[in-house]
Length: 302
Ligand code: ASP
Image 1 (cartoon, protein in one colour):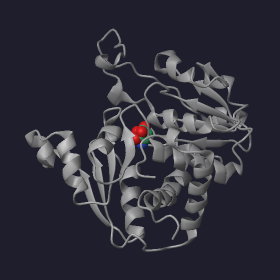
Image 2 (tube, protein in one colour):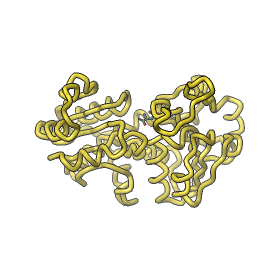
Image 3 (tube, helix red, strand yellow):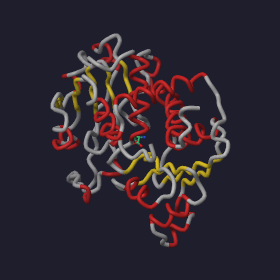
Image 4 (cartoon, helix red, strand yellow):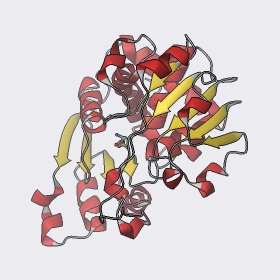
């Protein structure tokens, strides 16, 4: 596998292999990337994806070039995206890229001398998050087939939903999309015939096996991406959330997920609920990203 651009490129067999490899790296250490250099180039804010890729690369013995703040690079002098990628690919064996534009990872792959890993391209996809989400569901629920997964929040702009729903469509999974109508997306939801849309979380709370919360992706809610402003000219606020009361109605073995960062949609008091697995997702990201780095660098059979 040369690049990781979107989840559509993975077969079920490969997803299984990645999950098995992540399981292995949970308990084993190996410095097989000792002669490799991984560049993490982030044009958008990140905590977990940026740091876990760095930690994963270092755990495997790789050198890391971390670039988070392109305003200090020649991008600020007007250098093109393509020239930036081309240049960094001459110093690295792999580039992990986050960028605000849909399709940026594919553009990068076209000029790069080395593999590109898409760490989020605007409202497009976030494939490595989807794989760690899948891994978390598998670890917590033991199987994927037969589950009812409810995606809640900003369906339209959440790249994590876009990627995970595509991955789950390879399985026998029922999907519900839940959230304010303005944040829903008919075109996207229609890709999943076995899915339904609800405005109110109450419609799925006692049925879902997995509830996947997301924050409002405010950074994309500008008039130029089609969002309406309220009568004061401000971006509208939305206050959907999962509460203690709703958790009482949920299944006792439901799992509550979130790619993080969270805002108001999951109160801190729910962190102690054994069904809350969002910090387990954070930890799992490390093992899954180790597995993915080994895959793109051709070391996954070592
Ligand atoms: N961290 C995730 C992302 O980069 C989710 C989010 O930002 O809301 O897409």
